[in-house]
Amino acid sequence: MSKTPKHKPKLRFGGLWPIIRCTQDARWAVKQGMWTAVICAVVTTVFAIWAHLSAPAALTELGVSLLSLIDATMFFGVAVGLYFNSRFAAVAGLGLFLLARIMMWRPEQVGQLVMMAIFFLGFVSGVRGTFAFHQFKKKADDSSTAPITP
Image (tube, rainbow, N blue to C red; front, side):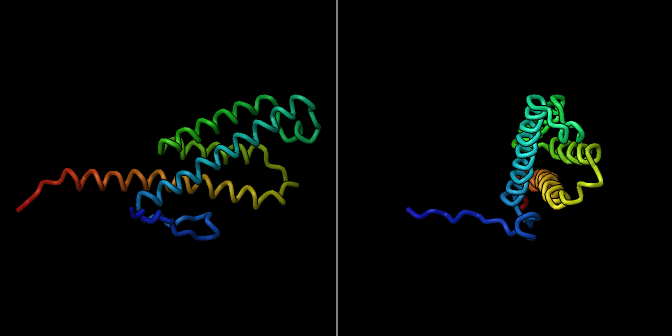
């Protein structure tokens, strides 16, 4: 029994910018955005609980509190939406991430720019993937419903 080789997406910049040529590539990009949202949700949850239990001054200064669990819940919602290829969830996740970074920005956080850029590219990848997935899906639907001409 021969197995068909698994499709491997072509990557740029160490996997942060996938080249999207087909539905499988689009799904891979969407998964990248989904896992970025999951990581954001988990990290936000951990810091929110830590801020509530021990209330370190550094976290309170950054605006992390138990209310941050609302952000975490929204990131989990984004991850679920991306799992189902939702364009709305992809754009909402990118917007939520940018809004959170703007609201929590402090000039002394310059060292975190690399990590923020990686997360930003993960969410952008999710947006690119969802829109490409729906474009490929529409092309496949259009070609399957096209009239057959002799």
